[in-house]
Image (cartoon, rainbow, N blue to C red; front, side, top):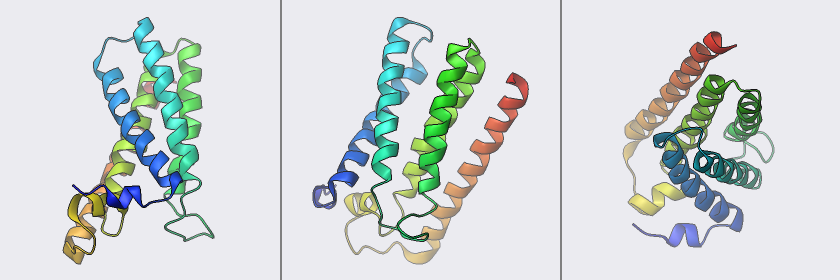
Length: 167
């Protein structure tokens, strides 16, 4: 693994990656530990803070420009911020099932699926793991992209199924 690509990246990208990795780890801790405890609430607040840092820092990353300075990836920023608010609102209202489904959706969509897209050729994470200028071929690139798209579809379907039962 070569850390040079991230060390040479902008401060926004460095902050984004660092907070995303921390959110991935803290989120895993929360998902697999007992719920409703003071520890869960503490780590949940830490995770929400990290996810806000991930989202806000992404606004300043303009590596892919399809709509001015922005790209479809920036839609994940909106998804995460809106769903963090919704998830917290559910918890405060006592709708724990809706809170759980919403926060799991943010974890899967905002970290796992979005993170998978960082492994596409030409992205910094890809360069860190596979090296700069390495070609995995267009077919494998399309497979990775397709798997990410399928993951998004499954996540949205799964969330939709949960919403019908909880609202």
